[in-house]
Image 1: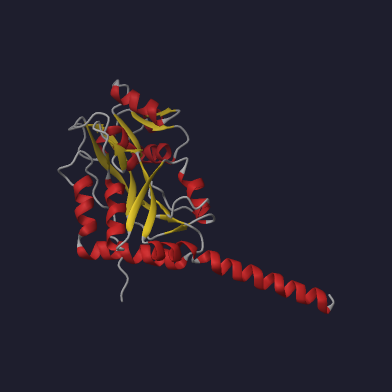
Image 2: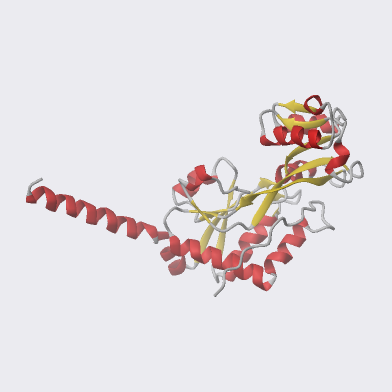
Length: 277
């Protein structure tokens, strides 16, 4: 390559690096300048975020988003998102963060950044209240699961471990969650195994009828999803989550929605991480 080519290549490289640096802190710079943060929050996921019969938008993620902004001394603009819209809205810069029961996975990590986990989902069983005391009691009963899901495989494994010789036949596979819920409601199965958060969403359709039983110690970390390559914004979110854990404000919100006296009782599976100073 001649000197002109090398110079042109160097200029292109400098331009790309400069553009990347400028883009990297774009969200953080705008938020700190304007004093407003736009947070995508679910409106159709109970109890994360849902609309009441009175038209009020409430939920765990709604309160969590409000408290995040309050701790940052920022005004919040909450934007309704669902599991299909948050990705595009975050990628296009229409929101600065997304809270929608989003599990931190490797595939999503290629597209977005994540905060530290603020919630831990776990495989659970839903059944009529008072039917079972523990997962060991499921031996010999029909259990619904979504066909091809992780829950389906773990249900069979769990029944075999409990000594159920008909484990494969006792796990009844259905094409989707709506079918599982319908089967449980019609007593075609005694229980339904799935993600705890998914089960709570359906349990809310018949408050006080169902309860959840833990069946696994494995957890799936749920985090705040953020634009890629803005470390200053990610650090601010992480530090704020930790401040909320330290001063008790996170616990207050969690107990409000998932405490033992609520319709959505779901014990916190892990403590939130707090980094040393």
